[in-house]
Amino acid sequence: MTTGEPWTGDDREHNDQCHARWHGSLNRSTAQPDYPDEWYDAQCGGCRFWIALSGQLGQDYGVCTHPVSPFDGRVRFEHDGCQCFAVREGSFG
Image 1: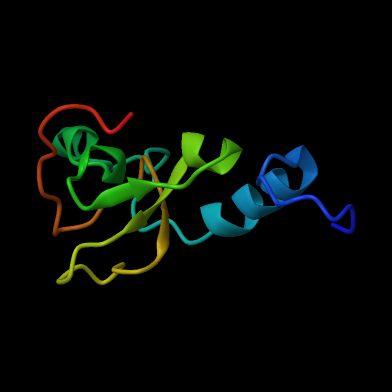
Image 2: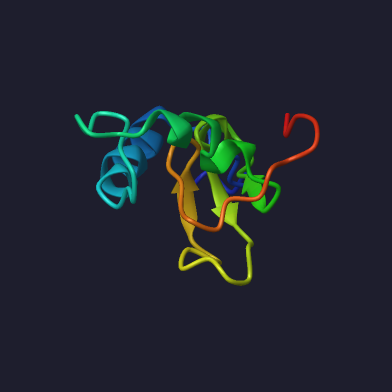
């Protein structure tokens, strides 16, 4: 980006490329035939330690901030999850 304007993160091509790269690092995929029903209620987007990114990517991605999670400090898809899930009170957005 060379316009001199602040980066907003709202670049469709860039975001699509990020999604394709990041989606490859899922811990849990709802496409797995043996995906347990209880995991639907324990996805990253509902965890109290998940913080949504800003811009368009924040609609699907956020950062894990759970100190004991193996994903602490890493970008995670909102429908991913891990064994350290902690219920969020209320909505994240």
